[in-house]
Length: 266
Image (cartoon, rainbow, N blue to C red; front, side, top):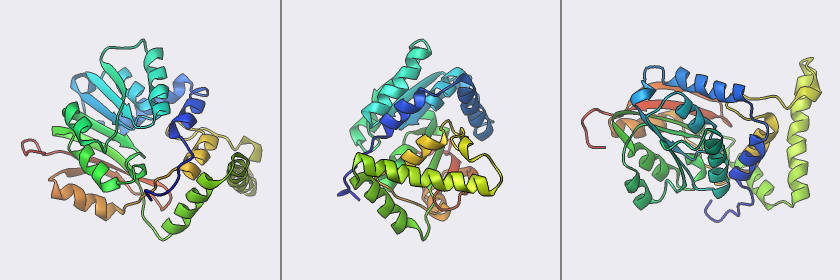
């Protein structure tokens, strides 16, 4: 995977997506946080958003009253996207947006510990997934929580990886053909279910529409996966307790919330 040429920027995709963002999508992000972390008091909590992408969940954490929010991303365009939402929120002093890498040990050590560490669909795109996961777990304060999602491992992995490599190697025109081939399948599926095929570009549950999600999926290199058992074993070795999990079929992201031990050095 380290030798794969990446010709895709998650951040450019997020910047394009921001043109479509409405307040109800931020509200859905807030509802998502409340659903998964319903036992936390954000008024006293510090939040770290690893790989903040569009910044929509950082904004939601801020609007919910978090004591502080720290957002970072390796992709400079994602940093710009997050900073755009930070500016729209009035450039609050308790929300920091910066460039950084979860694989940079010195950078991670400079961050401190957080009550909530959040990273959605990011750590499996670093090229060193388990190192990234370990670094993320190390940023959780005693008694805090980590909320992550990782692609589900399955027998389709080699085929999906090759598809992503093909997309990244293609010309701009070739990329568009691959995007519209995937969208065409989606439209056909809607027609078969007696739904309007031309209403294919619907908003999805986590603040992205179908078009931007297609680009995100096709372009997403590096690409690694994990089973739920692998993630649970990893967490148990660090004495973290599973609070919630939502298993996904292969091709999707399984979601986990773990709580850190209260006193152990982590």
